[in-house]
Length: 134
Image 1 (tube, one colour):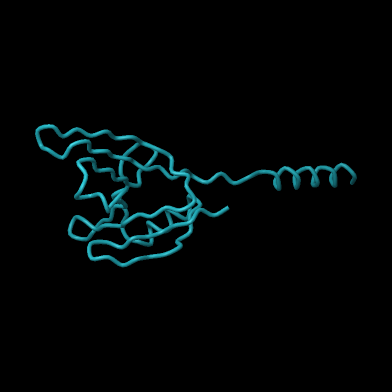
Image 2 (tube, helix red, strand yellow):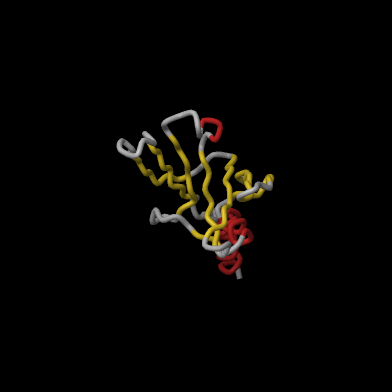
């Protein structure tokens, strides 16, 4: 009987110490150095996003059948700078992820530890602000 109680206590301790590991949020960061067609060059980096807040726009394409999550990093500089930086939600393989609808996107973000904080309706897509859960 003592062995069973000890074994159960040990299992309980192990289970309580085990943390659930959430999948990581990957983003592709694309930097276009010069928008002149003849000089244009770009750099693409796959990165793990770990900031507390994450703002992204969900845009439809393909006749409104699919959605991609992407955003310009500095929209205020979009037309005044030769450099343009934007990021996209990606998989671990570095490919941009397509979502069937906004619910699938929100569930994807929730699985990675982010909760929707705010939603701003836009003309070409809605902007979602997420906050990382502790």
